[in-house]
Image 1: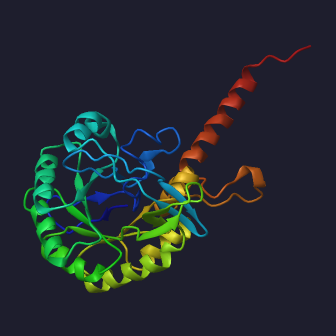
Image 2 (image 1 turned 180 degrees about the horizontal axis):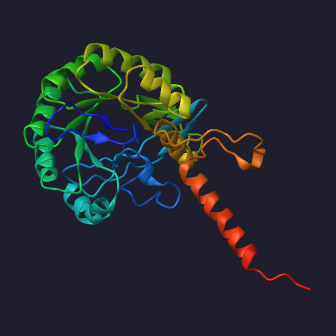
Image 3 (image 1 turned 30 degrees about the vertical axis):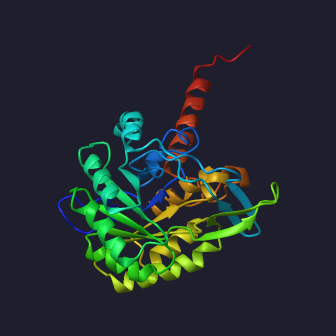
Length: 315
């Protein structure tokens, strides 16, 4: 299976699986290695990186909601130079493409980040995060500043407001693909501090809204690959995005509470899920069972058979 998630060019980004984690979900690649087989994903997207260091947000960072979660982090990172220095070797060893998510604050910083990444063999593409308050003119300048300074494809993660208008500006400036969309912003009261906190909203309720935007963008820009993100909590959620025309999907908040779900979704859309064997008992099957588990079980059975043949019988 080959999925081209950027516009066709000599450096198009082609994945073997249409499922990946959204920016910030898996950190910089060293956080979930013991819980998720990252090689089952189509690509690895880093946590957001800025040209200069950013400090963590103060106060409450996670506020539970009746139908999701509000998260406020401040996008902390050590700046692109230190991030590359620390994680370059890890990314070079990954068996899947690495996409660096860059915070697109202004054209100059987008240009500088793209120039740095252009020289990095460990990074295959850029995902440029656009600020919620950006105007079409600013989006055109930011995306253009990045696209003109790298031959690597530039994906643009759009805000969830004024999405279609900003998408046009991004495409005109050379975006290689569109990601729809960044989680919307909201405000909620932290039950512990009693203070109002502003952050991004995650949860299953995001899916219907983002699914509609994905369909709009696919219809409007048939030549530009669109990646859907928001509210993907099951295999069917991911398939709904594909049916709406998305070339691939990104999974976010469910990974924080059920890490294996991300892997199950990737195996399902990647064609690695097998059918349930006739007569299998309940404890012999789970929805995420794939080729890896099947081979592991077969190997374990063979070893048991071999060990039983070697064991002498008593008299």
